[in-house]
Structures are given as C-alpha cells and as structure tokens.
Image (cartoon, rainbow, N blue to C red):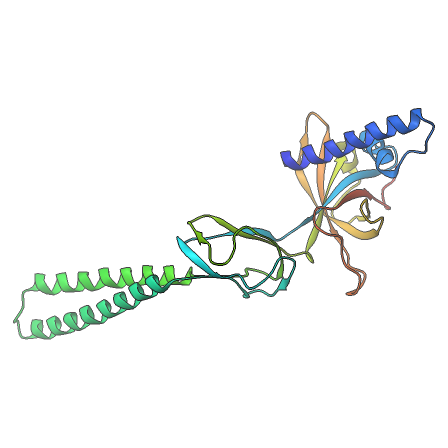
Length: 268
C-alpha cells in the first residue's frame, strides 16, 4: 500500500461522508461524491474512490553547476522523445574536453615511440609500462569530461508535455537542482481503493467504469493489477486499472483528476 495514496483516498472519502451527513440532515439529495464515500466504507453499491495518475512523469534536475541558455519547450506544450528541453552554457567544459582529447593524442604517440624503442631494447620496461599507464589515465579523464559535456543538454526521456518550469533561461543552477516537471498525459492508470473483501471477485482483466468528478465524464477500462497487500486499519486494498481511449479525438482525463470506479462484472 502506498501511504500517501491511501491517505488521499481516505481523506476524499471522509470529506464526502461529511457532506453526505450535512445534506441528509437538511433534506437535500446527497451528491454522487457523498454517496460514493458511504459506498466505499460499506461496499454497498460496488463503487470505490479512484484517482487518475500518469504512468510516466518526472522532475528533471541539473547534473551541472552551469547557466541555462535555453528552455525551448514552454509550460503546457507537447514534445517528442529526444526533444531538447534544457541547454546549458558549457564553454568551459567543452574546452576541457578538447584539451583532454589532445592529451590522449600526445600520450598515445609517446606510447608508440616507447614501444618502438623497446623493440631495440633502448628503453627500460618500467618506462614503457609507466607511459602505457599514463595513457590509460588521460583516456579515462577524457571520457569523464565527455560524459560531463553530454550533461550540457537535457533531452526528453519520453514524449509528453511540460507541466511546470522550476527554473528559467539565463539562471545559474547547481547540481541536483530541479529544473522542470514533465508528464505523459496519454499513458494513464487509475488507482482505486476497495474493501479487501472485494478481492475475491476483482481480478486482473475485469472491466471497470470510471466516472470523473471534475467533468462527469465516464471512461471504460479494466483492472490491470492488484497490489499484494491489505491495509490492516482500513481493511482496504489498492488495485490499478487501465483506461481505454474511445478515439483519438476524445481526450483522456488529466492526471490528478478523481472520481469513482464501478465494476460491471462484479456480483454484489
């Protein structure tokens, strides 16, 4: 069980339950959310609280102490895998990499010369071995600098959208500083909290219907997996569902939206 998810789902259920009590005392018709809170607690109608989340989301951080020169993708814009998201001013790192490459060339020629001298026994074995070790050293240094140069650009690890910029172009950043949040809004899962007694009938592949609170839209899907643990206090289990997109023109719900899931194939 994921503690933050459990707390969020239970809080939503408790909030809905409070709303149900207030509206009932006033003679008003309870809202779907308040009815859902009761259903989740009692298992009465086969509905359970659910939260939509993205399978792929990330906060990208800097691996350098450098100045940002570009952040070409704006908040809300889409990008493809491999798209440049952040570029840094790396003139110093590039110069160091060129110097290291030149040092490798010089030392490589030194080793070639020493090997030729060794053929005629004009150099000590130890001198040859030292020159070879020195070549290994400068080669490793050059590889390390080349790896640093690669960190001068951050490209998208997957296709998606920029959620938020946490830094701006022309700012100097430090290593491990968060720079931007990204998400793939087309690859979604639904986290659902259900009474543990439902697990007898809710299996991977079983159909589900998600009704989203924010829009009232309904989405079909199926159970993808069941987490292998039960919360001993609430006696609930977490299951994960996958939504089906009816067609390319119909957008999926956004990550973070919540609602309730029902299970048409479940026998109450």
